[in-house]
Length: 612
Ligand code: F6R
Image 1 (tube, rainbow, N blue to C red):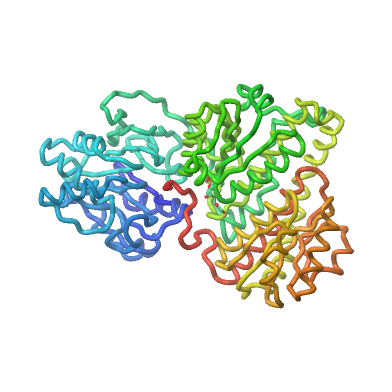
Image 2: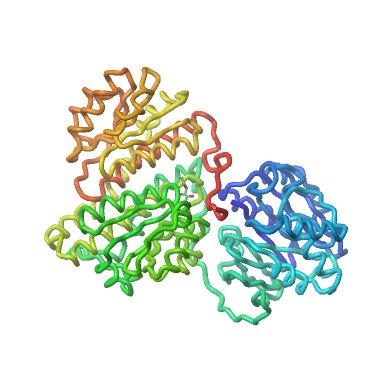
């Protein structure tokens, strides 16, 4: 979603801001803009719909030469993605300028009041209203920081903001409520950003703002307080990731890199958490709630999108191996259907970004009812990670491609580890079984690499389907969520309509869609559902659908039923879904590339959906 970057120091801010905006591109956006002050108390603004590259090509770098600046990538919520609606937004006097992530929910009320006071508006955005509200208070107080603070007291909704004032050109003011913001502390220079990726090549020393906080940023550092004006002292944290993790490293796209590095990301998820001799799993972050997990009457797993698919895999695993009832909920629905949540329920929130607004709202709802809350999160220090009672990081590393790949497999790995831990403690799984599972785990990275080595085979098959208009993905049992995930990946990045279904459910409707133009992907490993899946394949063949199967390396029988086979190594343990999904990631990737789609930044999508 929207991204913010800002700089104050001795250097020319424009190149820093443009570079920061490029590092924020992965979040998804439709327009970009920048404002710079260069000592003469005039704020220069350039903004336009389209990509940061277009902005960079057209901006007059001589005019935009100044050592204080803010920049923004916008993902439209209020108002179309046009030049005029792009951020930054000025107030009516062109004195104050603001970039904003989030939504001002009461902007209409504020707008009407400001209009009564003679304010006129140039854009359709809620952000311009906030700029004018700050102006309203600034006209009365002549104190920029106070004006921002007073304005924010009146605001309802979510925001991460950064603003400049022409009369006080030695500072940037930032504030946060529900939309991430951090301060990057340098040597005689200070950065602000909505995402660490935008500042990591300048400084690793950061301070995260909490909800309801604001800060006055100067080149010497920052002054942090609450919107209610209470002073805050917070230690600087050191970021623990490296530039290489947010660069393409020779790959054509981040998505391809992230698909290919899953042998590593998976190892990072389980490293230090399983004893390979005994098979016993320990997740340190869950120790404090371990007894509550063991005694829980029910787990509720809630998430959005791909993370929701991981939740469904978790449901199959935890119910099968731990015999704990599990309900999986879309986070966006959870809060609004007055859910029944008991104190002895364990609510698991899964989120790559740790900032998804709906998942965060579900977490707060669960806490309100006194349930135990557990996070399975990738981004360290993110809001969900901080607000849950306990949690386990997936440690997949920064995921830049908008379509989630390595985070999904690491989420499934985390759920598998939780399953093993509980199944053993509940004496449902014997230690001898655990030892065998641990042996399978040891071999998993090698098997993932074998899949990656086959990518050209998958590509060849993908190219045959680049002009397909529809796709169906079918799987049974734990591979049903894998079918859903395969379909989601395809529609997200190639814009081909795709649906995932439980294979047997096909007969109850989707079968009507099948003709010689319908590719149907079956997830058909040699597991207990294999014979049934073969019957479902026959049903599609009888109607001339094109059969693509995900099948095991030694399965020669499948050739008799398939037009095309995407091979995966044999895996009988609970880790099989992790392998089965990877060819589907490749399939969608190569189809999207063949269709000339913007794989890393698909249209309309955002990496982290921070609005409801
Ligand atoms: C799909 C995708 C999205 C996210 C969803 C939740 O490829 O990336 O569906 O999975 O927006 O995001 P997180 O996991 O950050 O809460």
